[in-house]
Image (cartoon, rainbow, N blue to C red):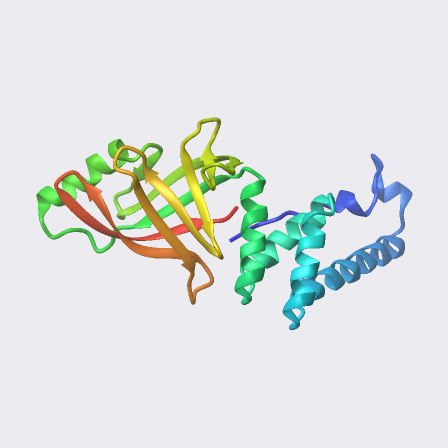
Length: 213
């Protein structure tokens, strides 16, 4: 899930905080900051979808790092699909490095297929790895949005990497075979799907999850 660190430095500055502010004053600052952040969060989770979407758009374009982070954190996992769509576009506009997890368990019964999966998955899918527990991973660097292709490209290239449609996310896993997967919010609160991954002569089934960091 999205993990954002809200630093204490936002509450005050100075090389020796303990020498410039009392515990009582610090507690008051913390309470005030927490109350303000709670108010912003309440706007994002407002049951009125018009208000929650307006809050999402305003916070994403505010230029305030803390508000943008909160909007992405709350919006990406909102029960409202329209809010999720806005948040995901904001997330990918930030050109993140994304991590994709693969769960290949239970492993193939055939020993040759197991060996092929272990050895060929990393070589066929750039940036991929797989462990002895049959859990795989892959990292990708998201670049700018290309309006002509309607996608976010990979890094500095012109190759489409991510396509958004509503609140679903399609990711190119392998360029040569144009191997795409489409992930949607599941009941577990994760963007995931079950898909077949081609490993030369073997088709492996995996649960694929997009990790939002």
